[in-house]
Amino acid sequence: MKIPTTLKHKPVIVSENYGNVDGRYAYDTDAKGISLGLAQWNDRGKVDISAKVWRHTGEKWSRQSEELPLHRVLDLAILVCRTQEHFREAYRYEKLYDPEKPVIDRIGMQGDAMTVAVCTDNEMIDEDIQLFRQALSDDDELIGERLRVLSSILKELGY
Image 1 (cartoon, helix red, strand yellow):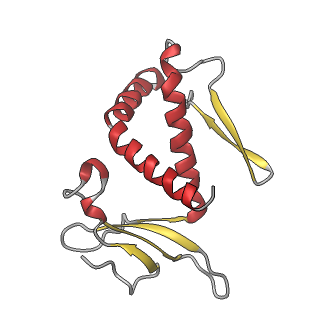
Image 2 (image 1 turned 90 degrees about the horizontal axis):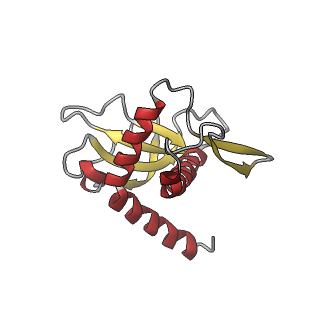
């Protein structure tokens, strides 16, 4: 299925078979493609690149398709990595985190730091963190494969 090129997001680099590799949803997903292109929110004279997940209902392109600036895509990847790291050692805590110190990390960038923390404002955090850990464990092979690919590509780029 071809990603539309007549909408506000202008695809430049595409993966039109993303539906075949969409994790546990592969071959049975509404996420049919992903792209990097010119962002739909661009103002005249100002150009941003965005990443987009293209969803298709089976009949039409969905309004639930998501578009993110590239830095947010990378910030999400950083969050995934720090989360993985936390849960490798989380068994040490009775509640899978220290309620007295819910901050997992502060990652310096842009003259400040992105705080990564357990959401203690969630009234159901004790149950939800258990479910989250199980889901993370269930998807370990899928996530691990992607992190290994990302690591390899980052090494090729000199990072």
